[in-house]
Length: 221
Ligand SMILES: NC(=O)c1ccc[n+]([C@@H]2O[C@H](COP(=O)([O-])OP(=O)(O)OC[C@H]3O[C@@H](n4cnc5c(N)ncnc54)[C@H](O)[C@@H]3O)[C@@H](O)[C@H]2O)c1
Image (tube, protein in one colour):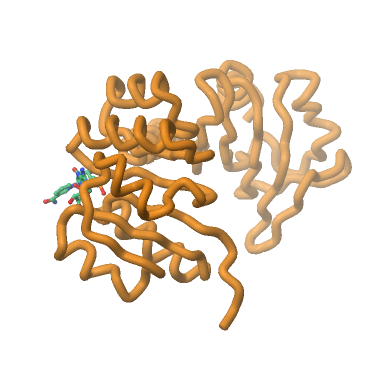
């Protein structure tokens, strides 16, 4: 049998946790799956290495399951915000090194940050942002927020930049952002040099502050 790559605890096997369980199983990860709903646990027992019906707010149960020794524990308890906060708190208290928690709202996210969650996942908000940016700007194909001020965007090359080299466009000096990749059909050029020629329809993957990216999108493209 192939070696397991990482040990991951999944707390909550609903829409999100269940999808994660499927993906981690495909990636040959050791999974401890916990949910208080027996049907959810049954649904994923063949994918998870260990699956347990338990209330994750119970510190004694988490300790007895050895959750502390896992590389990463992901908490996705949906609308049960009280359980999500208590579970995250208990996980940090018993010494789990890395805890990621799924937030349902801005206030839920703020509490999770305060109690020490190492990463907050807010998929509904993130996907809504990405889609909205794509819809309002025909030039933006994708958008990933890195921090409140910095993003990576995928912009489509317009006729304005057609057949121009990156050196000629001089985007870093003029707009303060960096092109980290260019997609030309199925080919991807990583860290493209100044002599790469853009063609209309290419995709530029650019990192920068939101203000610089917006200036480039509005004036440079
Ligand atoms: N279509 C629907 O009927 C429906 C229902 C619920 C959620 N949703 C959507 O799914 C998304 C949320 O997905 P999700 O995976 O975060 O939540 P989810 O509601 O799909 O799953 C949460 C899981 O956490 C478990 N749980 C809750 N408290 C627990 C505790 N103390 N101990 C152990 N297990 C516990 C529940 O049994 C459940 O299986 C949201 O977008 C929501 O709108 C849709």
